[in-house]
Amino acid sequence: MFLGIDLGTSSLKAVLVDGAQHALAAAAAPLTVSRPAPGHSEQDPEAWWRALEVVLDALRASHPAELAAVRGIGLSGQMHGATLLDKHGAVLRPCILWNDVRSAAECRELEAALPELHAIAGNLAMPGFTAPKLLWVRKHEPKVFAALAHVLLPKAWLRWRLTGEMIEEMSDASGTLWLDVGRRAWSPAALGATFLTTRQMPALVEGSAAAGVLRPELAQRWGMRRDVVLAGGAGDNAAGAVGLGAIHPGDAFVSLGTSGVLWATTDRFAPYPQAAVHAFCHALPGLWHQMGVALSAGASLAWWAGIAGYDEATLVDEIGMPRAPSPAVFLPYLSGERTPHNDGAIRGAFAGLSHDTTRAALTQAVLEGVAFSMRDCLDSLAASGTRIAAADVIGGGGKSRAWVAILASVLGIELRRVAESEHGAAFGAARLARLAVTGEDPAAVCERQAGLETIAPDPALAEAYAAGLVAYRALYPALKGALP
Image (tube, rainbow, N blue to C red; front, side, top):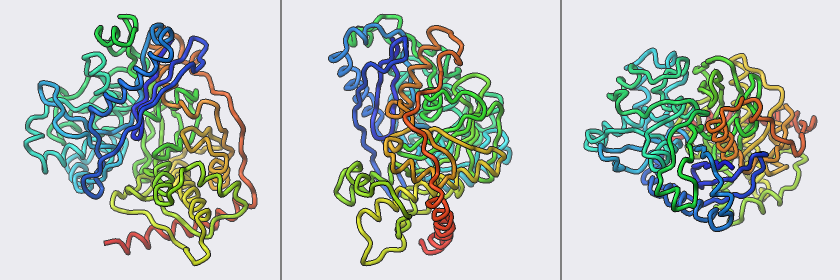
């Protein structure tokens, strides 16, 4: 039995997976985000721990025998978050999250201080990444920076609480800008550019390697064996890839979670920073990947549901299967955008509104706006030389047939809805836990997930969306020029 834990932005989830790779039980606990200033996004790490306790207590209550049989735990998590600890391990301030955009000036300073950053890290300096956050803390919170002894990403902080070990793995470390992604090792030069050293970084392992043992008192609390191994795990998208079986060069998927991601597995380090394409390590040895990222995918629909006063499923059901594009256009830049703009200051907008605009039209515009942002990602990867002909879909948005159909027509490729989309990253983390315990061949364990259905582009809709894409892209420079 293996346990996968996914520390997301809006919730912490866990899934129990048996030896036949069946998800036997799952539990989740919600998380909230604090926004103390415009563009800021933070969470209290203790909230993550409380959520983990809730989830594991629930699994022990509902499936005590299965939890007791767990041999390994895999961790997945939201990437880039800066969790800052002093020499005693105390948290110095709330974690600055991946969708925090306060450090735009520090990104420019970092690139000026280290011209070779793109070659080392394979990515542009973006406010979402960890390194510029530390420059911001040094400038604006000098007492915090002076007390800083350790920097951990969110899931590494959970690992430390679970095992007492400060360990990170390659896929999540790639999103810090401190990793030499091609060499799969911390870069002293990149760390030095942010006034840090390797002594303040966790040890590095591969995602399928053992990375600590569960503390005895926690094993006793949850009725588990005393030798439960924790795997290195993966950043959320790399864990989703492992869960899908996207471990071969050329495999691709779209994740419609809080953020939106277009992923392509590669067998080499293939940076393309000029279009804000991410090039990161995969969670398995000898593999890398490229990603295009939209910061607000499911987050856009959640925002609109809050404004409209209806739950997301009700709003999506209201539009049915679209036969024509919405007359309104939505730009999903609620917290800035990564691919292709690398713009933390841009904000979202509705356009094309009239007295006849309905709630359903605005809901559809939100889904289409996210799809257009994913088309920007597709075209950016194509410019780097990576062509995607088909992809799987995971994340909460993948449960909506209408949204996947819109996305297929906008991207112009076949999309496959998969059975495990609800557990995606947690399921992948459980697979990594199994690999860490058994040492099996990843290809034998990380098989491709069963598909629910394949949705092809609708030719008529695809043609209409091609025209809509032109209008969508014209709005970014217009909006950029209009904002203060």
